[in-house]
Length: 75
Image 1: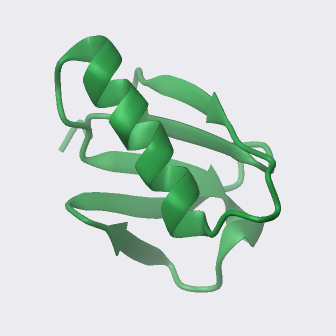
Image 2 (image 1 turned 180 degrees about the vertical axis):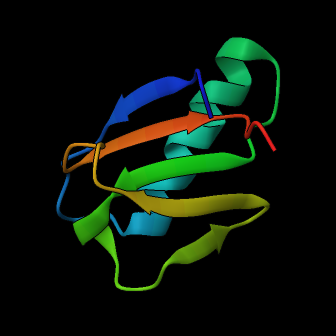
């Protein structure tokens, strides 16, 4: 992903899935397209990749904690 929308959600009461879904919903509403990729901080979960609905969630060292980089994959 080269471009996307950065979303901040530091609410400890929400699960990772809820946070990603909120970011995806906002992206879809704002840009009129369904994202297919969300990059999160490496400490967000242990697996290499998970899915929330049709969106792949991948870990990235370059994303700050509690931030979600949502957009369209380049592959």
